[in-house]
Image (cartoon, rainbow, N blue to C red; front, side, top):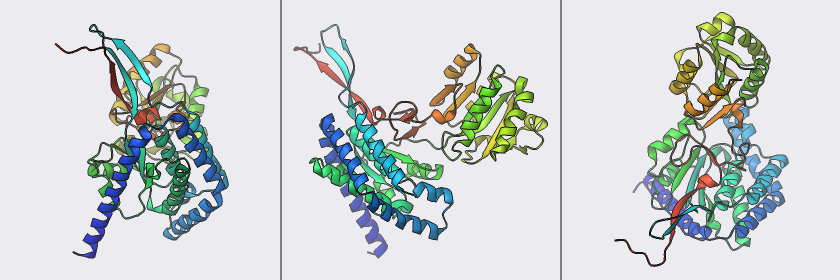
Length: 426
C-alpha cells in the first residue's frame, strides 16, 4: 500500500471515529435538561474570556500564514481575533443560553374521534456537520447553537483558521467536561487535508445533516460529494425594487444601506430594479450617493440613457453575486416585469420592495418566492439575530427542511406523540 493510500485510509478511519463519537454524544444531549445546557454555555463563555490571550496567540499563527500566502486584507480581517471580537463571541454564547429551548416543545395537540390525543413535539436533528471558511467565530457560534438545540456537532473550518479553530474547540470541550457532558458533543476535524471533507460527507450512518457556509464553489463541492442531506444556499443575488409609488428618500436610504453597509455578505444588495415611471428622477438621486460611496453601477440600456456614466450590464451581470461595491441596475416597465426579473435571475435568498401602495406590497410578499421578503426595509435584515432568532447557523435557500435564516428551531424537527387508553386499530 502506498503512503498516499495509507493516509487516505487513516483519514477515513479518523472521520468514522468522529462520527461514531458524535452519535453517542447526541443521544446524551437529546435528554440533557435545559438548565444543564445553559450552564454549559455560560461556562464556555467564561472559559473563552479567561483564555483570550491564548486564543490571540493561536490566531496569530493563522494570520502569519495568511500574510505569507498573500491572502486579501478582507480575508485577514475575517480571520483576526482581538479582545473585542473574543468578548463579542463570548457575549453570543450568553445570548444563546438566554434563548428559549425548543427541544421538547409540543406544538399542538388534537383529539381523534377514537379518543387518541395526538401531538407534535420538537426533537433535535441528531448530529450536524458544519463545513465553513475563514471566520473563527463560526466555531463557537455553531457549537453553541447545536448544543442548545440538543445536537452533537462536527466542525470543519478552513485551513486558513486551523490554529484558531482548534483552540476555540479545545476551550469549549473543556467547559463541557466540567459539567460531565460528553466532550465529543463538539468535535473539530483536526486536519487540513481536503480528503477529510470528502470522507466526512460519506458518513450517512452517523451524521444527519450537513450545513456548508462559504463561497458558492465550496457549497457546490459539498453538494456534489455528500451522501448526507445538505442545507445550503449557493449565493445571495438580492434585489430591491423601487416602485412608482416609493418615497424616494426612503428608497435611497434603503438602497445605500443594503449595498454599502457590508457589501461582502450574502444579504447585501446586488441588483436594483426601478419602475420606469420614477427612474428619471430616482436614479440620478441614488447614483450620486452611490458614487460617493465608491459603488460602480452596471446598467441596462434605459439606465445608461439616464446615467451615461454607468457601465453596460451584460446578461451575466443579472446572475452575479458581486460581494463588492458593484451594483447592477435595471429599469423595468412595471411591477410584473420586476417580479419576472426576480423569478428568472434570483437565488431565493432575499428581496425587498419600496412602495407606498399597500396592494402592491401584499402582492410582492405573496408572489416573490424567496426565503426572506421585505417591504420598505433593507435586505441586510435577512439575518437570524436581526429577525429575533437570537443567532443563526446559516441561511437556507432550500425549502427542505428549512427556508431562510436558521435559528434554534430550525436545528430541530418534530415527532408525533400519541396518548391513548387502550385503542386498537380496526
